[in-house]
Length: 64
Image 1: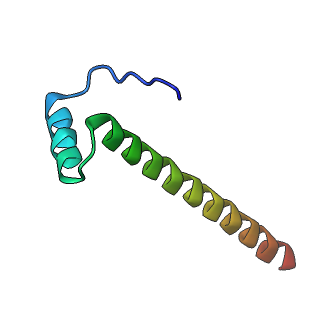
Image 2 (image 1 turned 30 degrees about the vertical axis):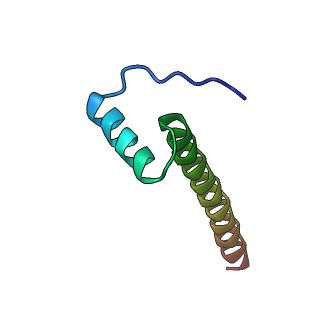
C-alpha cells in the first residue's frame, strides 16, 4: 500500500470526514480511501464515456 499525506486540510473538512467515517463505521483513513476510490472510479468511467462520445461524433462527421 502507498502512503498519502494531505497537507493543509481545512479543519471543517477534517471534521466532516470524521463524522462521515463514524456514520459509515470506518476509520478516517478508511473513509478517505473509500472517497478517493469512488472518485477515481467515477472519473475513469466518465473518461471512457467521453472517448466513446468523441469516437461516435467522429464517425458521424466522416459519414457526412
